[in-house]
Length: 328
Ligand code: AMP
Ligand code: MG
Image 1 (cartoon, rainbow, N blue to C red):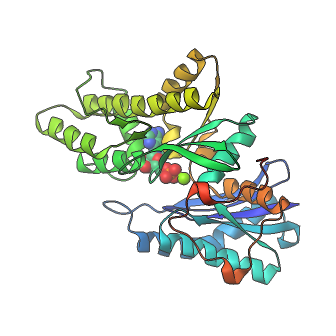
Image 2: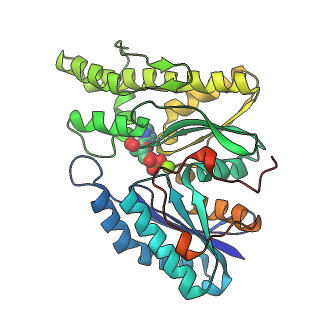
């Protein structure tokens, strides 16, 4: 039997159907791309409302199953943009009611950890979660997933997107900056902003744009931004490993698609004698399969929610959600 999972926390609407051993039976996604500028929550939510019913159908068709094969419907309850979350939750509630299936709430950040954990085969890795809106180092401890370090201002992906748009590009900026950075080689100085276990990016955005106005070209700027920002993430991940006496790291989030980030974290972890695992790109970015898989774990541990108390939680905190499938 399978779980159907719905992801809609930000720009991506996605429906995944996952089997008992985390095999992805069907996955259908569509990303909202604003015509100009960043994401407008209401516009993204409209996109999700329009596309999700078709994505449900596509995922079922890809899996070759009907509603009778679905054990439960899981949805991303938070954190995320309120209107976007509500779009996904509404579709999940309708499916749960009309198919007469239990509804399972899933925390989006925990889902990134769980999909990477099962795909890696690592029992208790640390997660470096680097996405558009989130940048966190997460580890399990004392019965909950704990945020050991995080961004103090914007998520790294939002920072890269904003920079690229200011440089004349379009959303999403991260992949375009990665290509541009491969042509760069000169390191210009940018603020290296690590505060204990936390990082900040807004100062780097201001400084990078100032360097650009002074004549630094896009390739060198992109190279320098990647070098500096990913070194900051690698540093806090290393400190978390040392502090928590762990030896393995998994990556998650759209920015974890970046080859440079992958190789910097890999080098650091392997120099410590540990293991680094980066999931395939489709499982790094926001996707319904990770919601379905975490829904499977939660459902098997008895975690369901009645429709009338299934409100979304845009600011849901990783360390406040119960994880009864993991030993305390
Ligand atoms: P997510 O929020 O996890 O869905 O990821 C979306 C974010 O990942 C956006 O900010 C993208 O710019 C960023 N992103 C995607 N691919 C890459 C890449 N190859 N390098 C850097 N950032 C990326
Ligand atoms: Mg995400």
